[in-house]
Amino acid sequence: MSFFSGIRQWLPSIHWLLGPPEPTRPFTPTYADVCRARAVLKTLKLPTELVLSILEHAQYWPVERISRSGGTVLARAGMNNPSAATLCFEANPYSTPIVKEASLGGETAKIKRIDFDITSRDQGWTSENTQGTFSTSSWLEVSILRDASNINSLLPTPRLVNTWISSPMDYHTNMVGRGWSLVKRPESALQGPQGGEGHFAWYLQGNRVMAGTQDYHVSWDEGGLCEVDEGNEGAGSGEGFLDALEPGDRVLVWARAKYPGWQCIVDGVSVTVHYGF
Image 1: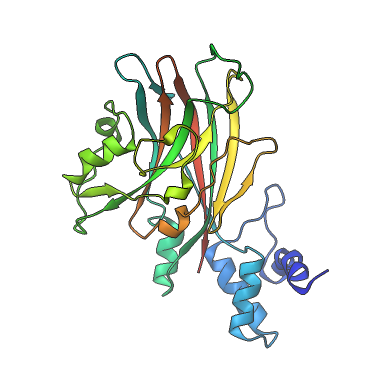
Image 2: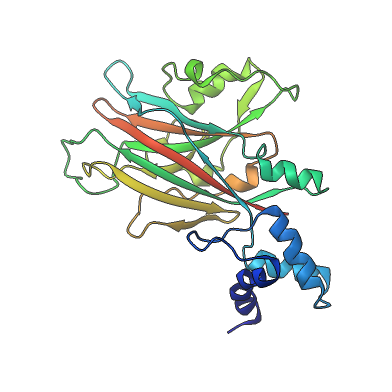
């Protein structure tokens, strides 16, 4: 067992000094726990750089879970709108209690990882021999919305945003005049049916064709895709997403459908944000 692996297993047991965690739930540290863990490790006469490296290797990170409220969200492509995008989640991950608490402590929070948990399905039929695969035209994707004016422009409410648009590029075009813009993803992060739509969203998750309602879990860290459900080949790579995310940015999750007859039906989205310091 390596030194870092041993430390990672040992960190939760530090609570014999700090008080035991709740026994019925997996332990996740708070910002105060991180501060106390640093202090305990410093009592071992370890240099600050090594203390920070230990906590980083152990992923001893506070988390904030942000869930979408509301009912089912639908994106439907048709003859008159062969491509459709509907907003199904919006949040500012740099405006959470953890970020504010760290700021009061004189530290700047950095997002180390984002977990997406999705419940979604397609239209339930296909004329092609793709049943059970991820060769789909029904998917979810993620954009980064930025206040381009730097004057805290008023963001339209989700109700207004959800008027019909064909793609995030269409949304970007409409928002530029209001002081907001979508951040471009790397060209190399293109996936699935995103071709020809600009570069204003990262592919998050495809719906398995004709599989009914499915739960999907996708995790992105600073290197891109780091964790998915077993057998989920429809997850997006996340390349460059966290590198592009800055304080003040909003994270938007879109339900997407392309080509007449295709639908993306989203019953739930939640995002878990892991913070380092």
